[in-house]
Image (cartoon, rainbow, N blue to C red; front, top):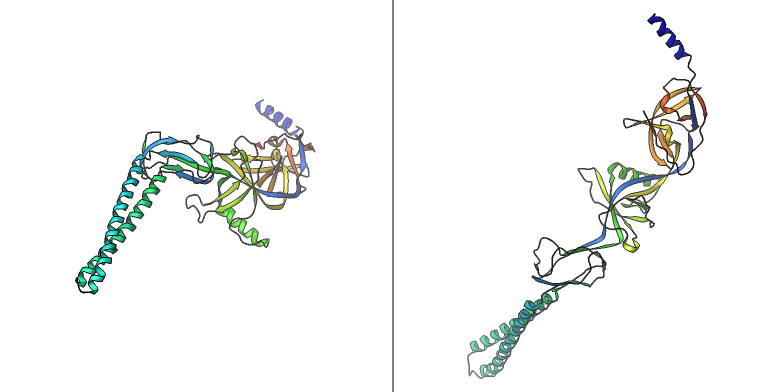
Length: 371
């Protein structure tokens, strides 16, 4: 009796109609080669503001997080000790000038006497040496005065660039000096703003060879416009330009670091943000299928192709996405019919009943089916 029941179930299964699926032909057209990387934003110039002399902070002359101009006074160190030091070295200079004057008078008096042999030649030489030493003391005193004036000027700590000033790391009344490990603050130029991202060694070499094949001049950084997509999904309105490339490959990651500069009106973008950087590196004639026709299985990709009414599950290599479509780099030819709806219920060699698939309305972003 159980054997009879199994035979009936097999007969029922064999009599089941082929599953209905929706299909579409793989298309071919020219598409842009787009590459995307994750980038970190930073100032195109970053200057740590540090004191050049020691002293107590007297005041702070900027608002944290606001723009400053080159030459704006950011901090003031109490100038009184350095003013006193300047007065002291100026007094030393006056003393040196007095000694210089006496030495000049001695030489002027001794010279005619030495000519008349009224004094020894040795006395005249000693007077001349004293005059030269006095001249040197005056020059040294002037140099000390110049340094003292510089030090006094350094009590006003100014911004070296136009940019946005960060939070202050020291408070009014703190003792600061040139040997402090932490800067008083940092000023960053954020318009333009710099974006750094990593490009694999393989991508770098492929881009070099592509330029050679196209007959373009060899350059370290191609003149390619780049775009920026922010963390909230919004597109930055201003295109950027690749700016520089690291001199060597990072041995740990196998990548080059590339920087790009983006205009940043209004200082909307700030250092420390993350964003996606993309660039169009050329065009290719590509085979495309709807994204929902692609199955992802443990990191590999498959497509169900219908040939003579039967299914063939075929591994493919996928490329970039183009709207609601996916570029198929290998494993599929243009014109072949692929299953778009019903992929999950078919197996290789299974007959199917195929109907044309209608693309979804604009804005619908389908996801690939999985097993």
